[in-house]
Image: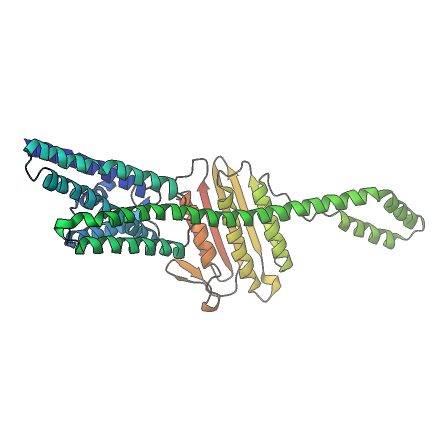
Length: 436
């Protein structure tokens, strides 16, 4: 009966700890399957990892758990492989340190304080209590994952994740090395390094947040640059209009004199010049100032490159997307399109067509541009040639990640003369917390 109670208590503790870990993982990784039953295999793997007993001078079971956890993350979650590998590398030092300390503390109390002389009920209570101590620690890890990593998946680059992985691997290597060489009689010598490894992993969570803030600051600066340029053009046009209005009486007098003298060609030419002065170079495509700023900047860049543009923008409502995401989606696709058109020697073949609409909670966006070079696909990324390997690849990676964040749809097609990107996002629902 006592053994059954102990087993039930341990199973409950393992279930709670595994659920906290899974909830933390789901805050920045996307489950491959949404059905609740799909969580059963990954929960079994996590329970096996949480329940693993880490002994001094023995690492065989620990290595197997690490490989099993890594395989489970790769199988049961979507997204980039390096993100799933990072999750395993960051989490396993935590699991190892917590399992080792809580398991060993109970053994030391039983050995040194009670001299291995405890009644069965006391032994059961001691073991269950030390196992229970894992729950608050895993809850802390869960809160850190949810608070600090939920907005980092799309923002951080693979090289940044590599830095995080190297820090975590260094900590993990130190922890398992000390555990392996630490004698059983002096197992407590590994406590400081296990604690340091645990704090290092938590520090990695915060480091991800710090790096994300730095990257986001750069993106916000780019967005601010678009806005500044857009508002600068508006102010410039307003000053031109005010100046022309001030001189309007003189202009009318000159036109009247030309007509009175029957100099009609000169009067017509003067009116045409005056009309050019009144022409407004900055456009308002929709009520959204981010869209206006980006489209105005890109249309001006296209005009300077002799690329005819056709923008059809219909925003009955503002897309419920983060400004940075909306700016990045528009700028990446348009930059790629402009660069592709520049590669066409004959300016008469260049074109850039943009259609965007947001209504009833749905955002649709279509970009079609001319192309000259052959498009090939490597590992899901589009490139034009080896000399221009980043033409559509880098920008489309960012766009795909934004679409994935909002659980949208993206279609990329091309033929001999054009390249097309279609994006559809249901923005009427709240954005998932894990950068989907």
